[in-house]
Length: 402
Image (cartoon, rainbow, N blue to C red; front, top):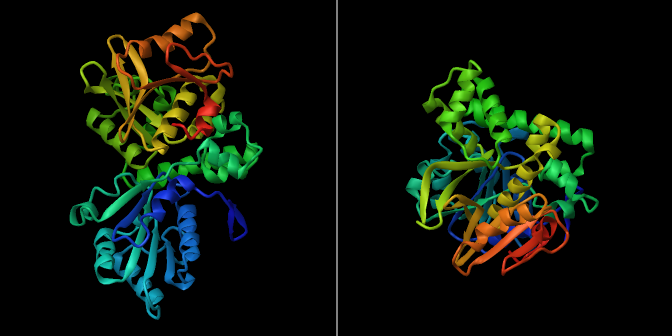
């Protein structure tokens, strides 16, 4: 079902709303994190609509967006507290405080904790930083908050927003919510603008980076190597050969800044036989592959990497913890765990030859356990064999089975 807010059709982000409904009025701060423009503000409006449907008076639901309108200049806890007191002064009954992009306020943790203790309120906060919970909030109120990670639209959500969307478009331009309503030229312009905004606001300014061109070069290097084993030493050598001076420690810090901004995700490699995580064997994936199109202009050249990136983010969106599998000299793209479920996943563009089939299926056949094993590709013909299921990627993305 679709509602409208200010005349705009809203996709009911049911995957996340299911979690929120069970948390409403619980003594937990709901912390919603995700990359800039992934739909966090949109999600707060969905929460507001849900609260209204549950009988909460609209005046008792207060959304303060700290990047827009009259609130964008608020930078201190005193300034924010003054606004909250003014907005809640004449209200009766429980209030619902929803703060958008809370990290823009210095020392926000102490103020949020005081509201939890001093007000009859239900608290929701969002932030564009995966490190949001590493500070005082996490230390002082352990067990009193719960994090919900928001991702750009899944393929299923993108189709709800735009029923005429093709998978090719989704694969090219990605899943950011607003982009689904734009034409081709507008999509590229929007991705350029969003990329610049994330780099400037969430990385360069926040991390106090003095050499922005190295950040750009590092991102391009990572995009060229999506799904490839990453080596700081190799990256350091590449930058050094380009006459870009940077220490290894700084390079590690830059990678951490990219992760904190929710732009990239690091995935560790797991030795399947030894059941241990391997150091220095990680891979990186981007939160949205549309940035690849914005920077390089032709995602078709990187289709195998893009498909792998799409599947990885979808697995995270569905709540799996994901590692990369190593079995002797072979690799499993993803080992996925959720509760008691375990799933092995291989991703391929096209299973076009016997050699390709062997490359994708044989590593799974060598795993001597009974957990589910699937191969995902763009092929429409079912090539399942020997207990290993083959799925078309669109079918996988639209299915609720996994």
